[in-house]
Amino acid sequence: MAPVADDEARMRAGRLGLEPGITVQEINYDTDVDEGLRLAVEEIIGAETVDEDYEDVVDVVLMWWREDDGDLADGLLDAIGPLADHGVVWLLTPKPGNDGHIEAEDISDAAPIAGLQQTSTISAAPGWQGTRLVAPRAKR
Image 1: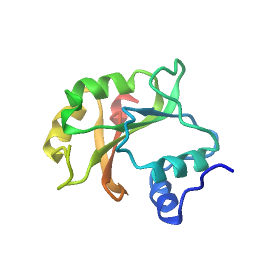
Image 2 (image 1 turned 45 degrees about the vertical axis):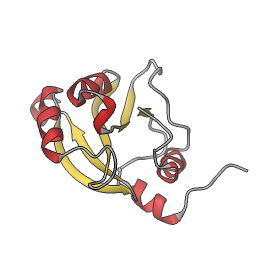
Image 3 (image 1 turned 90 degrees about the horizontal axis):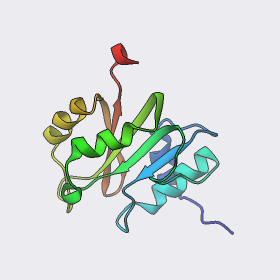
């Protein structure tokens, strides 16, 4: 039997605006990611997420990013490559006080370099916050 997400993880994943049948690419997966959120995302979309090597268009990118993962703007530029028009990047970063936390100003500085704008920030998981990034309306 496949693992099942708990109610809290489902509620948090529901805030990501996902729908059944969309393609979600997961970038920068590591052992510290929130498995409950991942399971809940896969339950919502009705499929497994695809990884960095996926070679088709995706609707949503879940990008796990920590302070020591490198240049955030470069990472965002890589993330938007396969993104569909009107697609969304959810930048998942450790919450303040956790190892690898990224300051909000760093996200605000990096997003426009990649041609993205920040629309909202949510509590995505107990140790992770999610920042929703989209292409500005003028560019869509």
